Image 1 (cartoon, rainbow, N blue to C red):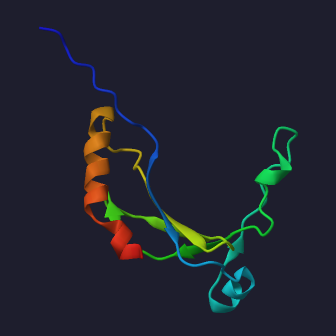
Image 2 (cartoon, rainbow, N blue to C red):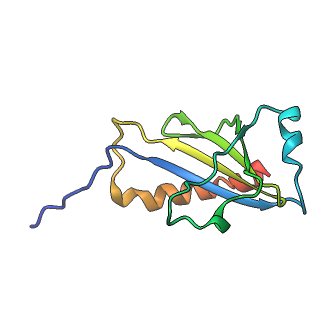
Length: 123
């Protein structure tokens, strides 16, 4: 009988990403008056990065609170707001160093995260 080799994940994170169209335009200048916000740095100006990939107005990020847990750890939640009327939300869970997560469990964990209907919870 052949033995099965199980690949364990030592370090990593799980990410759930959602994007929303919320209007025609967002006044990024007013966001810091409503809540704590951090502007995003422009993309790298390396020679291979075309100028048309730069934002005319860099988006603003917000660190939000959430109670979503995975592996006993609370997620970090970050919103990115764009001037063209869209925003994105990114949940991130760090994988504990001593976890027993294996490569073949990733799909199941992804289904569990998707089943939480977090898109509805954050909209």
